[in-house]
Image 1 (cartoon, rainbow, N blue to C red):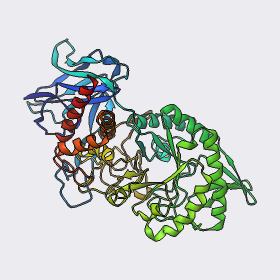
Image 2 (image 1 turned 135 degrees about the vertical axis):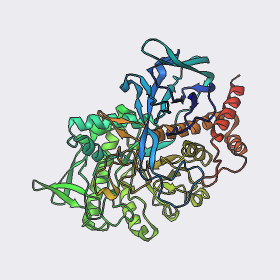
Image 3 (image 1 turned 90 degrees about the horizontal axis):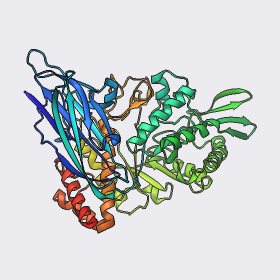
Image 4 (image 1 turned 90 degrees about the vertical axis):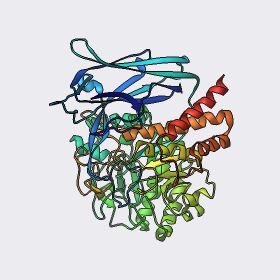
Length: 553
């Protein structure tokens, strides 16, 4: 048996899969779009050769090897999901490594006439420029044996329409942990080597659609056990003389310059108070009388007048620096992550200190109770998709959304065990409900829960069993930076779907686009009720492109 197919990027080819899905040979695209597909090989005859592509689009094509990753904790709930690929631990295709790193060699080896245990899959990504001419472009892929024998040849034809995809307007952040980079790569925090790695990670983040980054002006008070500290990654140097604080911004300026080079456009300041309740001050290192120590932290209540006085000076200085760097209007300030209704008074006291100091910058936080927005405590509520219905009733102009280790049942998420269709549904949902931004907690979290220990993401994808596999990161560490994942690429495709909706909106209006989303689905698409059939998104995309093509002609 030898099966070689061009297949959708939505497929995940696991060990033992028979490639029963339909083959792709052509598609329509817009200028400026990214289009990805895969070539999968399952064979009981050894196929070893060099993978080559012939195409007029070759300068815009990237190829990756699809690697099976450890999925040690597929889910933490007992309910079996219809679009959960499996609830059993094992291997799942996820890690993408540049095919050039293996000299473009594909090895589908078979022993004793048995099908190769590990299917070989190539991820092909086409990044079309905005100025490309309309027309049909073939992409021919071949596997060529050392003696010149062509082991297989496949052609995909992209028909480029005479119109451009709309630029991304969605603000998208996944929290960035520079301490995890230092720990995993074994480099000193904020050494030249560390800054080089930070830039490499940021470039990979931008490549999967991330345009906002968490800035560690002080060590972010996130996933930290009570009474403990994570490695100090504070960018702002702080000195105290009497009741006056002075601030050094050299490292912050270097960090922002790196962000700008990498393509980051928006900046979120680290949270000012402890997570899950805003009860304590963040761990903040201060030099006093020549000695550096955590002047603020778990031993300082959020309402302590000393901390409030510090914040008035600190926040004003940070805002002033971001304004001097020309990014104040693209800067967002956190107060505390996921406060609960029992802490609303403490949160209000903190908000009343911070909001008057930040000019055109905005406040935003992950929260699930509408009362925080109703009281004017936060400008951009970031609401879990399982609690967002209450917020959507009020037509909030700067509504954001998030998901994390929950919800696991029903909703879209980016866990390894989920189908790529389920992950990619995010884009259409964000468009339909006019969500302005999306936040997730894990770009590169390589720790166990509460950062009690470091982990190796190649050994555990579940933070040591704490979360569903894939929740904690979408980037894998490489020797000189980071590798992408299928889940990161699929989330980028979700944003592409959102951009496609906005492109069609120019021609037929928003109401008509929303109507089309529901009509193709056969019902009202909601965060908690959407098509589970993987044919839905390709069908919707095809219909939208056909409609755009009519208007272009």
